[in-house]
Amino acid sequence: MPKTAKDVVWMGGSLKDLRGFPDEVKQVFGTANYYAQLGGKHPQATPMKGYKGAGVVEIVEDCDGDTYRCVYTVRYADKVYVLHTFQKKSKKGITTPQADIDVVNSRLREVKIREGIKS
Image (cartoon, rainbow, N blue to C red; front, side, top):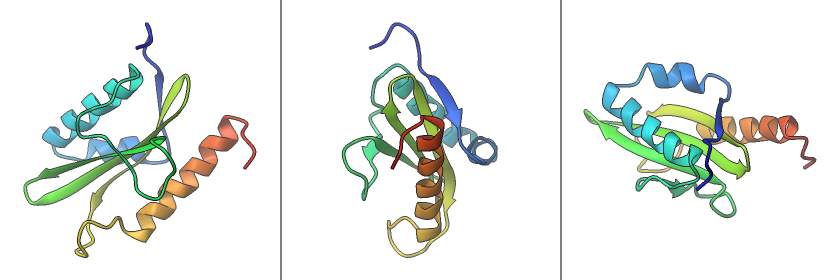
């Protein structure tokens, strides 16, 4: 693990959205992000389906009958980019709603621009 923690960059409204979640959810997501900052992996962290490798990670937490997700990327050496935090409202199984996937994709494009990577 690195000696210093990576910086966390909150994309779009991800931090504002997180602040509205229940305390238990904020605790899990905060711990998961801290693990990522130190180069580790939280036990609940899984690669998000549809993205190659483990560069885009999601944490899923259930609380009081609701499901919350935090999606971040660890593709970059010195930063953890939190791409999207949201309460899953779809009633269609465990599939991530397309609107949320679109947000993740859009913010990933923004990260590539920030990092000077050409697609």
